[in-house]
Length: 215
Image (cartoon, rainbow, N blue to C red; front, side, top):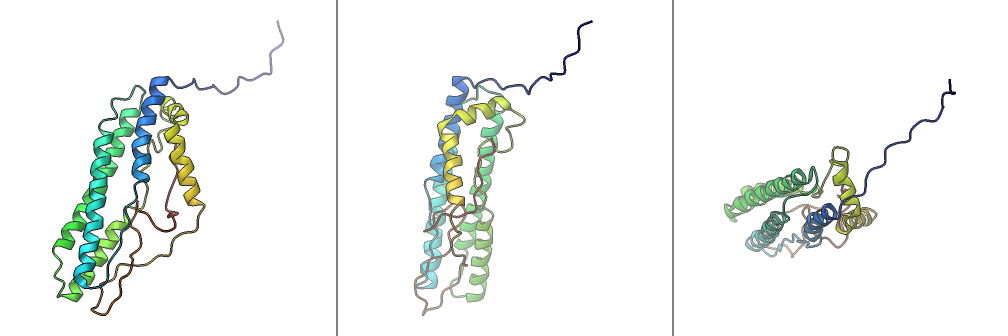
């Protein structure tokens, strides 16, 4: 009887991603990379109550348009040639639609503000600011899907735009956080001020509220 071998089989090695899968992942991540790279700065012109509300509405409208543009591009990415890809794309669409709903709700609240009623207007602005805080978490393509779909993970790791998202967000997270603040209702003597950037928006210093795509 031959002696038993003590050697143990090593861990299975994953097969390289197919060119079609890498190309698809590159398109998907490219849309999110563009979304990340098109910042919207939320600024409040506190010259007067009217300008404060109007400036915030303009920023929200800009963000709404950016989300719509990204949703359109996501829907043009096409069917995934790799298991889990379509699920990832649908998840991104759902995430952005949730963000659009928050922005739309905030715009509706601002549209009902009576600037003469300082107390109510202040409360409305506070509620809008709290809503915008819900957008801080960045949109992550393929988040948490690597273990379930190894082929998708391999494609993402080979796609230039997916690795670029990881690199950019890692470099941002290494920077100090921006100074925090709050949206305040201006008095007639207020000087113009800038509100803190809303989630997914630009600041003089990129926010550390980021995570890298989990491939």
